[in-house]
Length: 168
Image (tube, rainbow, N blue to C red; front, side, top):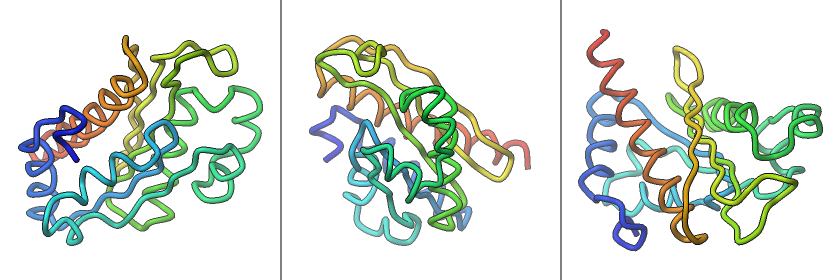
């Protein structure tokens, strides 16, 4: 799966190995990527030791019901906003009882969604020390936007694990 998205398989293995070594887990709440992050992670044998699961929350109703996103925030900001990525990440972590939660939202195109231009992506990462959101602006077709979002989610998780390892 990683190859189909032009993601270095070594990055995926490195993330899983570091999680396993630290006895930590990860879960996802994905809108834009429709489960691709979880699919990439679980494409590696032995990933079940660290991948708790994933929520595919394409609709706003499911963002609220399954991931715990605040309905008022969705109404005020729309589904593609840094606060929503933050909420998705925190919801994945909490609802799936994982050490880390990844949340992804954005517009893959070809046209805008609720006034938000294609290629606008927000990747959230929730951990014990709080939530980080990485905004992205991606040029390209749907496949490219989604691939870049998945790669950035994995890189963000990898970098944060490395940072917390150094800080400990």
